Length: 188
Image 1 (cartoon, rainbow, N blue to C red):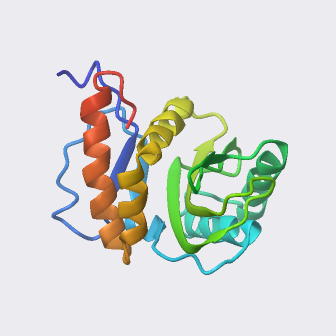
Image 2: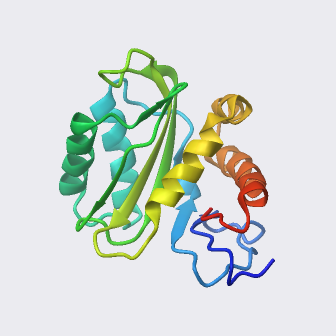
Image 3: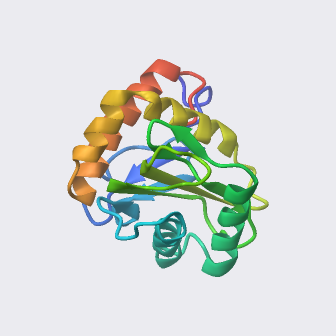
């Protein structure tokens, strides 16, 4: 398989861990999902608080330059159309000027968070941030993430993770499986 035929967009990076940073990347990778963006237990009990927690993580890693504008963009999008995929998963996302670099933040809530108007509580929130002018096929990223979270074993395994590093290891393993299944058209 040639990297010229396979665009890999979502790449996991464990900050400071040389063992997990040895992956050789094709030139097309633009998303970096680092351990500091993985939250094994969200502190917030409501939709806005949980979303803000993830926005703050993206802001802290300099993926987002204006956290308030990005938060408002995400909330406006949620108000227009819920990003709840069902099965306890939400995939809030936005493309806007307040994003400096593409980024993905992932949070887990063991108790579940209400995401109106959906009746089912959300346990996994995966937020995708994309710069306004970036030529990034982020809808393909969202599609592949939705495919990943459709798997009940993935959702259950992720819920069992109790540290950011265990989340990283779990997601890395399962993303590799998605890459194999969806190659050569994968954007993960």
